[in-house]
Image (cartoon, rainbow, N blue to C red):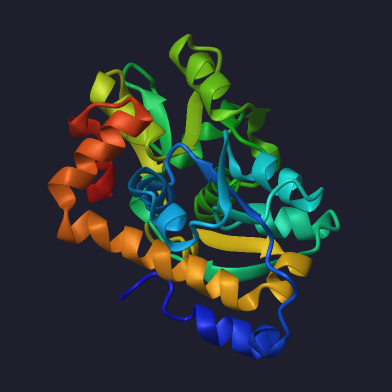
Length: 267
């Protein structure tokens, strides 16, 4: 199934497709993360630039979803792509955003890691332990669900809120006992041979990733939003129709080995 097939239904349901468009913006500001495969491929192939040659396409990278949605909320972005939980945290904080699409859940790419020498072999053994995670991220959600499944609560662990890069450093130097993280960081860690998987998101009922937009932007540019998502659907298809080339492009763009990218796509 294409990842954006129900976008039109979402927009139609909210009445956005029937909203008269104002003058379209001269620039489009798209937020993405290092591991945003669809967006990275769209960027590297220049799909939006070709579709909208009259517009300046600005690609803005963020370390994680919460930071991206902060930018969306203050009007520095038009469209964002995050995991499942960041939009909920943002809405609770008062962000005026709308969901414009979703991809299929990737539970194998949402993980909880420990070092090879760790004595921990189950989530239940995390009680009292330090767990590194990005606050308000999809990993935050995974930790909550894994703890609940193991009969624990969030109060039973010591959460250490860090960005992915800082969490990786803390994990590697032994400052934390476990690291909740998504791909490609998971595939990077496994390729280095010093980590093992304690648990992942399988069986947890995860959803997303989600695409969101500023409400005003979506309401004023519903047709434009649909055209953008059409191009992202094309980008997503390239991971299957041009897998080898896509792996090479993603490896070059993300600064990772092709082996890591292959493992990431397999997740």
